[in-house]
Length: 280
Image (cartoon, rainbow, N blue to C red; front, top):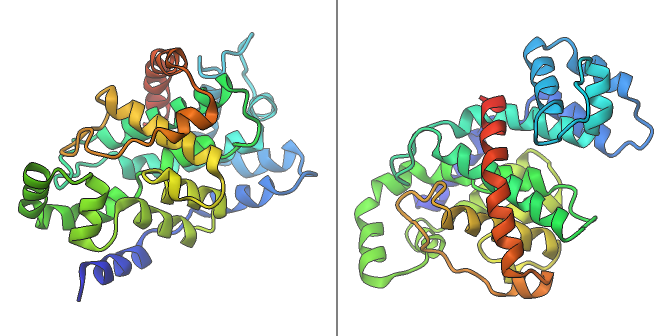
């Protein structure tokens, strides 16, 4: 059995999306949903309620006054934010894990994922982009495929080391050569099973090859840039460091300037730390 076939079996066994996430996802498409409906879903989970209030009062949102009720928090955050929070809480436990194949310590993947999500959202805010509602979710989930591929990377570590040192092949291309699939494709296949929609799936699938995507280009450009910014800041570099192709097209197409990237990097770290504390 090839590595690709083995990975496909692991994808089929990957945990399904939790029921609460599934319910909230349905409401995202309903313009008539009211906050009482959302509140009734959330309020019976004390831990989730506490984290909703923490997030609503965090510097990430910068409320003018303290928010003390779940209803007020839901109004402030909105349905998409609540979905993102529930999904983040669900996924964060899986992202806090050592990945010896990739050389990532316990919290490295979680920090990199949060940093990327926050940075992508900050870039979208700077550019006043209105058509990228899923940018935080995609940023958080973009490296989910690492969880699947890590044991195979560990098994073939010697081949990967040879590819790095002797051939200097970009890491995602090395994954394809050795395993028949890179972590971006593996993550996208999980999200297809979760039925998160084509925009989120594409954002994960093409975050290392933004020029190859047929649609959702702005979103994919944001995730690509935020991911590279995170790695350049030393967040979650693992054994691959900066050994990825960096596309010049996103900066040109989005009209970004050097100061935009510098400002984003300076604003992201504190927000990442606060969200990490909330999610763990």
